[in-house]
Length: 172
Picture 1 (cartoon, rainbow, N blue to C red):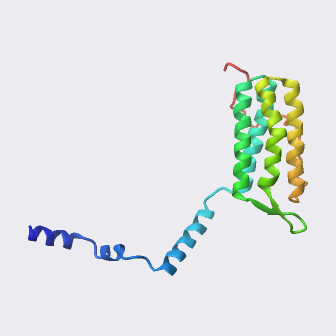
Picture 2: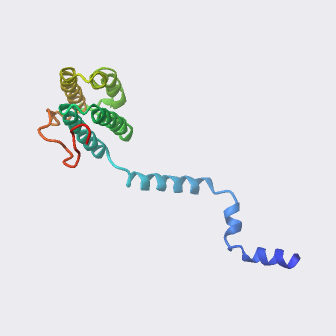
């Protein structure tokens, strides 16, 4: 038994004892800071999330146009999800005057009004209501772009689907 215990003790890596002792707080903080910086370098930026929003929102238009309401509902949900993701990536932006703009405070009323109306039109399968709500949502999004100093990001009804591989007709 004693021989087995000694053998096991000698089989431990030399730094095993060091792994069991508490980390030096300044070293631990430095390691965590380095890890945070590394993670910042690998996560998508807000432009990526907003490109996804554009993709989903454009496809939403064409799903509605073909009256594929389940697909429209899917793209509505993806649009909303990616808008929220974008506000988590950069929660605060500065306007051209240097004032802080909290993006969640802009998104919340959009979700409660134009995005809700858009979803209601999908649920009701009402194409004319959908068109009005879609245009209102475009205006709401543009108002956010203006608020954060990006008026050059002007939106319009898409001319062609963002995804050419998706069949927009229902039942396919």
